[in-house]
Length: 194
Figure 1 (spheres, rainbow, N blue to C red):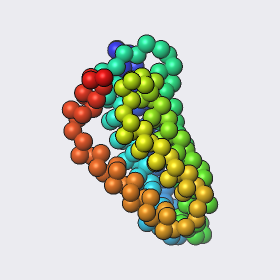
Figure 2 (figure 1 turned 90 degrees about the vertical axis):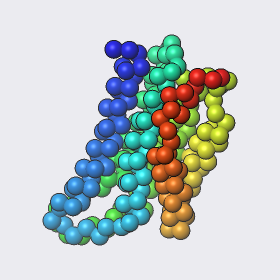
Figure 3 (figure 1 turned 120 degrees about the horizontal axis):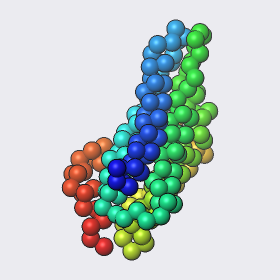
């Protein structure tokens, strides 16, 4: 097993935990005998977190081109995934077995637990690039996007304005969906030229 395979193994397990939590939460909401008032905004953010987890996992492939020389680099690979898992757990409700459950009310009440970890994920993902590639190879565009995304997530943790939540969700989904059309050759050659 190579060092990269070893690193990816632990990061993959953590990402899978977050994905399982989101998908399991959907299953619990569908299965419960309680009356669940589904909200598209809550659903949209759960989909976003699921897609983000997959995209981050795919993006980690680019690290196979880089030398792993310090144990700390492995921490920087895993830490962003932990923030994703925290956000996945925060957005996934414990659905009651009876009565009524409103996912919009849950979403608004738990927005700090969802969006502050997503802000930390964005910053930690950028620090992972810094830890692996070094300052001379860090992409300025990715740094600016990471800081902007983190600021947007902090804004969502603070505000209850639905229009802001809708706007940032739409923009975030565009970014993640745009990533679906990134060629794998980009990830394979991302760090090859300094």
